Amino acid sequence: MTRPLTAAQRRLIEAADPGTGRLKGTEAQLTALVKRGLAFRHPRPPHDHFLTPAGHRAREAQAQAEAEPSEPSEPQAPASTGGVFAARAGGEPVPPAAEGPARTREVRSAWQGMLELRRMTNPDASTDRPCAWERTHLVQAAALALEAAGHRPAGAAEGEDGYRVRETPQPDAVAVHAPDAPTLRACAETLEASGWQAGEYTEPRTRRRYVLASPRRV
Image 1 (cartoon, rainbow, N blue to C red):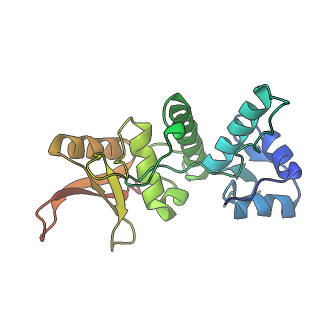
Image 2: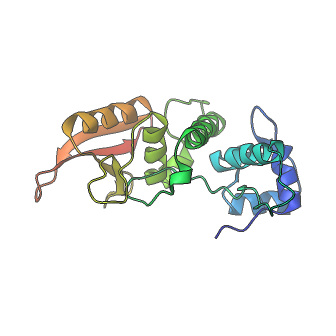
């Protein structure tokens, strides 16, 4: 279970610049957020700290929790501000309560945070190709691009079709599987439009088609 944020960490995230996600705090506070995946240290001087996509999502969840009226008769669960958003790679169990408009908002917010992360960390401020974070989180990054574009991930139950993003022996590539050729082609097109290089291949043993995708560098 993800540890809830401390009051100081919540205040730090809430005070981040609304446009850039730039954070201000002590070195210890900022380092703690980096360790939790909610912030990153910019590689160029002055090495400021900024919210990651998970950090942006945490701030949005925090603001939403504060805006919702509480019921005094029932204990309230702590806000989900621990960077718990995860793109769906396909095949994982999903609670029914996590579906619908709320999930759509989460995905949209995460994708906007990812674009901002690209702008802040790519040397030319480009948002049309993956950044360093995506290159070290290939499955999550590719899955987020697909889900943000409206593709449906496969369910956990047998026969629940949809895309599945999986690791490959190649250190810089993921495999995307889909139930049919049109869906597979659409996934490849989405990844291409999101800054990935994507091509269709055939598994030698099963003869099933799949997409091999890797982040574009230029």
